[in-house]
Image (cartoon, rainbow, N blue to C red; front, side):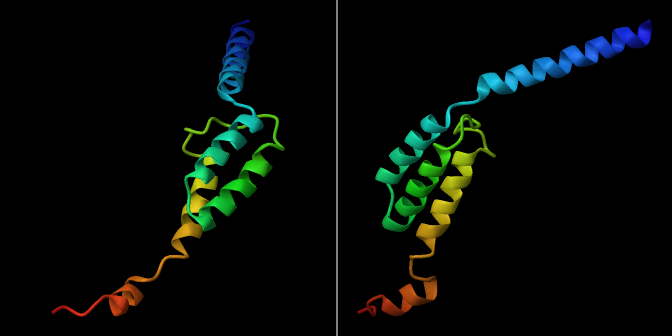
Length: 102
């Protein structure tokens, strides 16, 4: 009897966790809109990545909220940052282009 009671509590706890996760989920369209907004404020390389990721996000019925550190949106922002960074001159290149001191 005690085992059945504990199993019931465990099932209840698991179902509650599942409900909490579902309540925090947002639509893929909402995530896509947020990524498009970020793209509008980004450099060319990042903009291309974010627009692509926004289109992909819209294919999902639900995703983690954009402020979740491991969410689709955060991963997209990371990709966009790396893409934009790859277009910047390296520090050694920038130093060689800097005007000579007078």
